[in-house]
Image 1: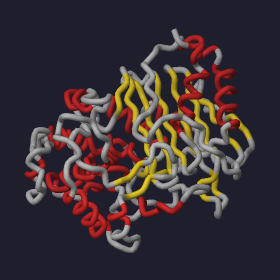
Image 2: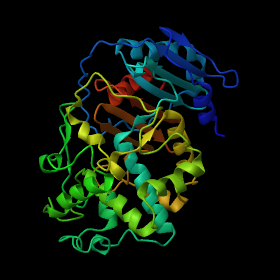
Image 3: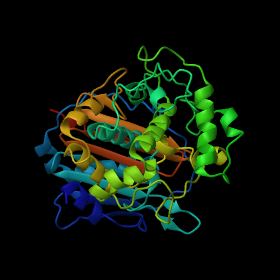
Length: 399
């Protein structure tokens, strides 16, 4: 078991205390700060970032010895950032091999008085896309499909299917319009296209809702000729889920479970909420259709927790999920810093997520010298903004 996962497991506590730090005996520098649930609604800071574009910071090296020496001071500074910003959720930061920090605060379920903890699961939003991308590349390794395949092979009635390749879907260069409307200015304004919104139902099956979404996607004209531009579109990864099902012969969810979750020990991850899934609160719940069965799917439907996402990072970087060649393909930026399921900035791989009132971010370097994970079930918590504040607090430790 990796050191990162041990850190996450041994730091499993609920947020019953106002502020407390817990040190794991077998991990020198792991700290946990838990804060009392804050019920006041806060205004989202102006982070200037969209759900799909994390802050572009070039990878810079740290003076790890200084960070180790100042671990207590840094922990106090991060605690203050969390407290001052009334952060609600779970956040993990690792710098080098000797500094790890995790905080859990706010409510996982306000009605049942359950607090967020390291075990709390949240919808991860578009962090899902890297799992979908890895599944496609694994199927390529197994000779089940090719990145150069035109998607007409999988959707024979799609009028522009001959123009678009699997690679275009992965790299967001297909020109296929987004079935999700994402307003970059308003935190809660992530909704479905009105024509879809009016037809889907919370009582319908996943298959019924998926058919409505697919029919809408297939009826739209392209925004541009494939491979000429970049345009973020959830529709790309929605279609990839369908391709995974056709080529594997099993459902998308079962494929991810069998070939990723189970081998990596991601026992808390899935696509259906359970008792460990945090209930969102204090936000605009008018767009709860985003959580209807079949809507998020292979584009933004993953539910996970910090412990499991650390397992994912380990497995991906250790080539346990896909081989080294596939990993290089997956993490090489194509257009606009986007690779396949990741934005790439130097040596750092990053993606954020927003679904209904849930917000997330996963960012890490290929050598694991920096890992940041943040999951929140509170609409007014912005993980990207917290990441910026954390990074700013560490600027004096850059080489």
